[in-house]
Length: 267
Length: 83
Image 1: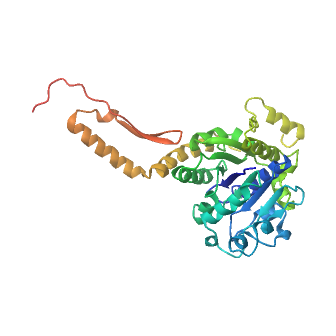
Image 2: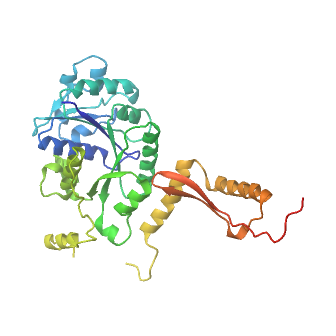
Image 3: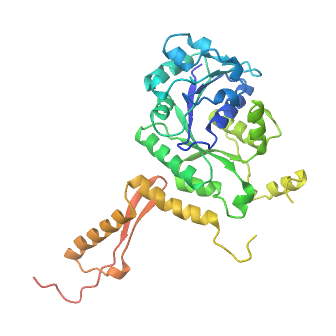
Protein backbone atom coordinates (compact mmCIF):
# COMPACT_ATOMS: atom_id res chain seq x y z
CA UNK A 1 0.00 0.00 0.00
CA UNK A 2 1.10 3.53 -0.69
CA UNK A 3 -1.40 5.94 0.71
CA UNK A 4 -2.73 8.90 -1.20
CA UNK A 5 -2.58 11.94 1.09
CA UNK A 6 -5.55 14.23 0.43
CA UNK A 7 -6.06 17.57 2.17
CA UNK A 8 -9.43 19.30 2.26
CA UNK A 9 -9.17 23.07 2.43
CA UNK A 10 -11.36 26.11 1.83
CA UNK A 11 -9.94 29.40 3.06
CA UNK A 12 -13.26 30.45 4.55
CA UNK A 13 -14.57 28.75 7.68
CA UNK A 14 -17.92 27.02 7.91
CA UNK A 15 -18.23 25.82 4.33
CA UNK A 16 -18.13 22.14 5.27
CA UNK A 17 -14.50 20.98 5.37
CA UNK A 18 -14.88 18.79 8.44
CA UNK A 19 -18.16 17.30 7.25
CA UNK A 20 -16.59 16.55 3.87
CA UNK A 21 -13.56 14.86 5.42
CA UNK A 22 -15.73 12.69 7.68
CA UNK A 23 -18.08 11.73 4.85
CA UNK A 24 -15.44 11.02 2.22
CA UNK A 25 -13.47 8.99 4.79
CA UNK A 26 -16.53 6.94 5.71
CA UNK A 27 -17.36 6.37 2.03
CA UNK A 28 -13.83 5.14 1.31
CA UNK A 29 -13.81 2.89 4.38
CA UNK A 30 -17.20 1.43 3.35
CA UNK A 31 -15.52 0.39 0.11
CA UNK A 32 -12.89 -1.47 2.11
CA UNK A 33 -10.09 1.08 1.94
CA UNK A 34 -7.98 1.69 5.00
CA UNK A 35 -8.35 5.37 5.84
CA UNK A 36 -6.71 7.60 8.44
CA UNK A 37 -8.19 11.06 9.04
CA UNK A 38 -6.07 13.77 10.62
CA UNK A 39 -7.73 16.75 12.27
CA UNK A 40 -5.41 19.63 11.36
CA UNK A 41 -7.32 22.26 13.31
CA UNK A 42 -5.17 22.47 16.45
CA UNK A 43 -7.04 24.24 19.25
CA UNK A 44 -10.42 23.95 17.51
CA UNK A 45 -10.85 20.23 17.18
CA UNK A 46 -14.10 19.08 15.61
CA UNK A 47 -13.59 16.07 13.40
CA UNK A 48 -13.89 13.85 16.50
CA UNK A 49 -17.47 14.98 17.25
CA UNK A 50 -18.57 14.86 13.61
CA UNK A 51 -17.30 11.26 13.46
CA UNK A 52 -18.79 10.44 16.88
CA UNK A 53 -15.43 9.53 18.44
CA UNK A 54 -15.06 12.31 21.01
CA UNK A 55 -15.25 9.95 24.00
CA UNK A 56 -12.44 7.72 22.83
CA UNK A 57 -9.61 10.24 22.66
CA UNK A 58 -6.57 9.45 24.77
CA UNK A 59 -3.70 10.89 22.76
CA UNK A 60 -3.66 13.53 20.03
CA UNK A 61 -1.36 14.60 17.20
CA UNK A 62 0.75 16.90 19.39
CA UNK A 63 1.38 13.97 21.77
CA UNK A 64 2.75 12.08 18.76
CA UNK A 65 4.93 14.99 17.65
CA UNK A 66 6.29 15.59 21.13
CA UNK A 67 7.01 11.91 21.66
CA UNK A 68 4.51 11.16 24.44
CA UNK A 69 3.00 8.29 22.48
CA UNK A 70 3.46 6.21 19.36
CA UNK A 71 1.54 7.11 16.21
CA UNK A 72 -0.58 3.95 16.53
CA UNK A 73 -1.67 4.92 20.03
CA UNK A 74 -3.13 8.20 18.76
CA UNK A 75 -5.13 6.46 16.02
CA UNK A 76 -8.72 6.02 17.19
CA UNK A 77 -10.61 3.25 15.46
CA UNK A 78 -14.11 4.09 14.19
CA UNK A 79 -17.09 2.50 15.94
CA UNK A 80 -18.63 1.05 12.80
CA UNK A 81 -15.85 0.78 10.25
CA UNK A 82 -12.81 -1.16 11.43
CA UNK A 83 -10.61 0.22 8.64
CA UNK A 84 -11.27 3.86 9.54
CA UNK A 85 -9.11 5.80 12.01
CA UNK A 86 -8.91 9.32 13.37
CA UNK A 87 -5.86 11.16 14.66
CA UNK A 88 -7.40 13.99 16.69
CA UNK A 89 -6.11 17.55 16.98
CA UNK A 90 -4.83 18.83 20.32
CA UNK A 91 -7.45 21.04 21.95
CA UNK A 92 -5.31 22.98 24.42
CA UNK A 93 -2.40 23.87 22.15
CA UNK A 94 -1.98 26.23 19.23
CA UNK A 95 -1.01 25.81 15.61
CA UNK A 96 2.66 26.45 16.28
CA UNK A 97 2.91 23.11 18.10
CA UNK A 98 2.92 21.49 14.64
CA UNK A 99 5.24 22.20 11.71
CA UNK A 100 4.93 21.28 8.02
CA UNK A 101 7.79 18.79 8.45
CA UNK A 102 5.98 17.12 11.40
CA UNK A 103 2.97 16.59 9.14
CA UNK A 104 5.15 15.18 6.37
CA UNK A 105 6.85 12.79 8.79
CA UNK A 106 3.53 11.50 10.19
CA UNK A 107 2.10 10.98 6.70
CA UNK A 108 5.25 9.18 5.56
CA UNK A 109 4.89 6.83 8.50
CA UNK A 110 1.25 6.14 7.57
CA UNK A 111 1.84 5.69 3.85
CA UNK A 112 2.99 2.08 3.85
CA UNK A 113 0.06 0.75 5.88
CA UNK A 114 -2.84 2.87 4.58
CA UNK A 115 -4.80 3.54 1.38
CA UNK A 116 -5.84 7.10 2.15
CA UNK A 117 -4.80 9.80 4.59
CA UNK A 118 -7.38 12.61 4.71
CA UNK A 119 -6.34 15.87 6.35
CA UNK A 120 -8.91 18.37 7.60
CA UNK A 121 -7.33 21.79 7.13
CA UNK A 122 -8.22 24.68 9.43
CA UNK A 123 -9.80 27.80 7.92
CA UNK A 124 -7.47 30.62 6.94
CA UNK A 125 -4.25 30.63 4.95
CA UNK A 126 -1.75 30.75 7.80
CA UNK A 127 0.32 28.19 9.68
CA UNK A 128 -2.41 25.57 10.19
CA UNK A 129 -3.26 25.61 6.49
CA UNK A 130 0.42 25.40 5.55
CA UNK A 131 0.80 22.40 7.86
CA UNK A 132 -2.22 20.71 6.30
CA UNK A 133 -1.10 21.10 2.67
CA UNK A 134 2.58 20.27 3.25
CA UNK A 135 2.25 16.48 2.95
CA UNK A 136 -0.65 16.49 0.43
CA UNK A 137 -0.53 14.60 -2.85
CA UNK A 138 -3.86 16.17 -3.73
CA UNK A 139 -5.84 19.07 -2.36
CA UNK A 140 -9.61 19.33 -2.55
CA UNK A 141 -10.82 22.92 -2.27
CA UNK A 142 -14.34 23.09 -0.92
CA UNK A 143 -16.63 26.08 -1.36
CA UNK A 144 -20.26 27.13 -1.18
CA UNK A 145 -22.04 28.87 -4.08
CA UNK A 146 -21.75 32.18 -2.29
CA UNK A 147 -19.56 35.25 -2.92
CA UNK A 148 -17.29 35.19 0.14
CA UNK A 149 -16.67 31.43 0.00
CA UNK A 150 -15.85 31.56 -3.73
CA UNK A 151 -13.50 34.48 -3.28
CA UNK A 152 -11.62 32.74 -0.45
CA UNK A 153 -11.46 29.50 -2.44
CA UNK A 154 -9.80 31.47 -5.23
CA UNK A 155 -7.14 32.74 -2.82
CA UNK A 156 -6.42 29.20 -1.65
CA UNK A 157 -6.20 27.96 -5.25
CA UNK A 158 -3.78 30.80 -6.03
CA UNK A 159 -1.55 29.82 -3.09
CA UNK A 160 -1.61 26.16 -4.14
CA UNK A 161 -0.62 27.18 -7.68
CA UNK A 162 2.27 29.24 -6.32
CA UNK A 163 3.38 26.23 -4.23
CA UNK A 164 3.25 24.14 -7.40
CA UNK A 165 1.09 21.54 -5.73
CA UNK A 166 -0.73 19.03 -7.92
CA UNK A 167 -3.72 20.91 -9.41
CA UNK A 168 -6.47 21.11 -6.80
CA UNK A 169 -9.98 19.79 -7.42
CA UNK A 170 -13.17 21.59 -6.44
CA UNK A 171 -16.05 20.46 -4.22
CA UNK A 172 -19.13 22.68 -4.40
CA UNK A 173 -21.00 22.13 -1.15
CA UNK A 174 -24.52 23.10 -0.04
CA UNK A 175 -25.91 23.86 -3.46
CA UNK A 176 -29.60 24.68 -3.12
CA UNK A 177 -31.33 23.54 -6.33
CA UNK A 178 -34.42 25.70 -5.79
CA UNK A 179 -32.38 28.87 -5.35
CA UNK A 180 -30.27 28.01 -8.39
CA UNK A 181 -33.42 27.50 -10.44
CA UNK A 182 -34.78 30.89 -9.50
CA UNK A 183 -31.34 32.40 -10.26
CA UNK A 184 -30.78 33.46 -6.69
CA UNK A 185 -27.76 31.22 -6.17
CA UNK A 186 -24.62 30.79 -8.24
CA UNK A 187 -24.91 27.56 -10.22
CA UNK A 188 -22.19 24.91 -10.24
CA UNK A 189 -21.31 26.08 -13.77
CA UNK A 190 -20.93 29.69 -12.54
CA UNK A 191 -18.59 28.65 -9.72
CA UNK A 192 -16.53 26.44 -12.03
CA UNK A 193 -16.29 29.21 -14.59
CA UNK A 194 -15.09 31.67 -11.93
CA UNK A 195 -12.55 29.39 -10.27
CA UNK A 196 -11.30 27.59 -13.37
CA UNK A 197 -10.23 24.28 -11.79
CA UNK A 198 -11.32 20.70 -12.19
CA UNK A 199 -14.57 19.63 -10.45
CA UNK A 200 -14.67 16.58 -8.20
CA UNK A 201 -18.09 16.89 -6.59
CA UNK A 202 -21.34 18.82 -6.15
CA UNK A 203 -23.08 18.27 -2.83
CA UNK A 204 -26.69 19.46 -2.55
CA UNK A 205 -27.86 21.21 0.59
CA UNK A 206 -29.42 18.47 2.66
CA UNK A 207 -30.90 18.38 6.17
CA UNK A 208 -29.64 14.86 6.73
CA UNK A 209 -26.09 16.25 7.01
CA UNK A 210 -26.98 18.05 10.24
CA UNK A 211 -28.85 15.05 11.56
CA UNK A 212 -25.76 12.96 10.85
CA UNK A 213 -23.48 15.42 12.67
CA UNK A 214 -25.86 15.50 15.62
CA UNK A 215 -25.59 11.75 15.94
CA UNK A 216 -21.90 11.51 15.06
CA UNK A 217 -22.73 9.29 12.08
CA UNK A 218 -21.70 10.85 8.75
CA UNK A 219 -24.44 10.65 6.08
CA UNK A 220 -22.30 8.71 3.63
CA UNK A 221 -23.55 5.69 5.55
CA UNK A 222 -27.15 6.61 4.74
CA UNK A 223 -27.98 5.15 1.33
CA UNK A 224 -31.04 7.42 1.02
CA UNK A 225 -29.26 10.71 1.70
CA UNK A 226 -28.61 12.81 -1.42
CA UNK A 227 -25.61 14.49 0.18
CA UNK A 228 -24.39 11.07 1.25
CA UNK A 229 -24.59 9.91 -2.37
CA UNK A 230 -22.64 12.99 -3.49
CA UNK A 231 -19.88 12.28 -0.93
CA UNK A 232 -19.73 8.62 -1.96
CA UNK A 233 -19.31 9.77 -5.58
CA UNK A 234 -16.41 12.03 -4.55
CA UNK A 235 -14.76 9.06 -2.82
CA UNK A 236 -15.08 7.00 -6.01
CA UNK A 237 -13.65 9.82 -8.14
CA UNK A 238 -10.70 10.09 -5.75
CA UNK A 239 -10.00 6.45 -6.57
CA UNK A 240 -9.96 7.33 -10.25
CA UNK A 241 -13.40 5.99 -11.11
CA UNK A 242 -15.54 7.85 -13.62
CA UNK A 243 -18.82 8.70 -11.94
CA UNK A 244 -21.36 10.97 -13.65
CA UNK A 245 -22.25 14.10 -11.68
CA UNK A 246 -25.63 14.13 -9.96
CA UNK A 247 -28.19 16.16 -11.84
CA UNK A 248 -28.67 18.32 -8.78
CA UNK A 249 -30.71 21.08 -10.37
CA UNK A 250 -32.45 18.86 -12.87
CA UNK A 251 -31.96 21.22 -15.78
CA UNK A 252 -31.72 18.51 -18.39
CA UNK A 253 -34.17 15.90 -17.26
CA UNK A 254 -36.44 17.50 -14.72
CA UNK A 255 -35.54 14.49 -12.60
CA UNK A 256 -34.92 16.64 -9.56
CA UNK A 257 -38.41 18.10 -9.80
CA UNK A 258 -39.95 14.69 -10.13
CA UNK A 259 -38.04 13.37 -7.13
CA UNK A 260 -39.11 16.38 -5.09
CA UNK A 261 -42.73 15.83 -6.11
CA UNK A 262 -42.59 12.11 -5.37
CA UNK A 263 -41.22 12.67 -1.91
CA UNK A 264 -43.65 15.51 -1.34
CA UNK A 265 -40.92 17.84 -0.10
CA UNK A 266 -41.90 20.68 -2.33
CA UNK A 267 -45.10 21.58 -4.04
CA UNK B 1 -42.73 37.45 -3.55
CA UNK B 2 -41.83 40.29 -5.88
CA UNK B 3 -44.37 41.94 -8.12
CA UNK B 4 -41.91 43.55 -10.44
CA UNK B 5 -38.89 41.94 -11.96
CA UNK B 6 -35.71 42.58 -10.08
CA UNK B 7 -32.24 41.72 -11.25
CA UNK B 8 -31.51 38.09 -10.50
CA UNK B 9 -29.08 38.04 -7.60
CA UNK B 10 -27.00 35.16 -8.99
CA UNK B 11 -26.10 37.34 -11.97
CA UNK B 12 -24.95 40.18 -9.72
CA UNK B 13 -22.93 37.70 -7.67
CA UNK B 14 -21.16 36.36 -10.73
CA UNK B 15 -20.43 39.80 -12.22
CA UNK B 16 -19.11 41.15 -8.93
CA UNK B 17 -16.99 38.08 -8.33
CA UNK B 18 -15.49 38.26 -11.81
CA UNK B 19 -14.16 41.74 -11.07
CA UNK B 20 -13.07 40.98 -7.52
CA UNK B 21 -11.18 37.85 -8.56
CA UNK B 22 -9.32 39.69 -11.31
CA UNK B 23 -8.21 42.30 -8.80
CA UNK B 24 -7.30 39.66 -6.19
CA UNK B 25 -5.31 37.60 -8.67
CA UNK B 26 -3.43 40.46 -10.29
CA UNK B 27 -3.09 42.62 -7.19
CA UNK B 28 -4.34 45.46 -9.38
CA UNK B 29 -7.09 47.71 -8.05
CA UNK B 30 -9.65 49.40 -10.28
CA UNK B 31 -7.84 52.71 -9.76
CA UNK B 32 -4.46 51.24 -10.65
CA UNK B 33 -5.93 49.65 -13.75
CA UNK B 34 -7.27 53.05 -14.88
CA UNK B 35 -3.88 54.66 -14.28
CA UNK B 36 -2.28 51.88 -16.31
CA UNK B 37 -4.71 52.47 -19.17
CA UNK B 38 -4.03 56.21 -19.21
CA UNK B 39 -0.28 55.72 -19.26
CA UNK B 40 -0.51 53.06 -21.93
CA UNK B 41 -2.55 55.39 -24.13
CA UNK B 42 -0.13 58.25 -23.60
CA UNK B 43 2.80 56.12 -24.71
CA UNK B 44 1.00 54.82 -27.76
CA UNK B 45 -0.27 58.23 -28.82
CA UNK B 46 3.31 59.48 -28.79
CA UNK B 47 3.94 57.22 -31.77
CA UNK B 48 0.63 56.97 -33.63
CA UNK B 49 -2.70 58.73 -33.74
CA UNK B 50 -5.37 56.80 -31.87
CA UNK B 51 -9.11 57.14 -31.64
CA UNK B 52 -9.65 57.63 -27.86
CA UNK B 53 -13.40 56.93 -28.07
CA UNK B 54 -12.92 53.45 -29.45
CA UNK B 55 -10.30 52.33 -26.91
CA UNK B 56 -11.02 49.22 -24.88
CA UNK B 57 -8.53 47.89 -22.36
CA UNK B 58 -9.60 45.16 -19.96
CA UNK B 59 -8.26 42.29 -17.92
CA UNK B 60 -9.86 39.11 -19.16
CA UNK B 61 -9.63 35.67 -17.69
CA UNK B 62 -9.13 32.45 -19.51
CA UNK B 63 -9.41 29.62 -17.04
CA UNK B 64 -7.07 30.75 -14.27
CA UNK B 65 -4.85 32.84 -16.54
CA UNK B 66 -5.32 36.61 -16.71
CA UNK B 67 -4.53 38.70 -19.71
CA UNK B 68 -4.60 42.38 -20.38
CA UNK B 69 -6.46 42.81 -23.66
CA UNK B 70 -6.21 46.16 -25.40
CA UNK B 71 -8.18 47.12 -28.47
CA UNK B 72 -6.90 50.47 -29.63
CA UNK B 73 -8.23 51.77 -32.95
CA UNK B 74 -5.75 53.84 -34.92
CA UNK B 75 -6.77 56.90 -36.90
CA UNK B 76 -6.07 56.59 -40.57
CA UNK B 77 -3.27 58.83 -41.67
CA UNK B 78 -4.41 61.33 -44.28
CA UNK B 79 -1.19 63.23 -44.25
CA UNK B 80 2.32 62.41 -43.24
CA UNK B 81 3.33 63.63 -39.87
CA UNK B 82 5.69 66.51 -39.82
CA UNK B 83 9.22 65.98 -38.52
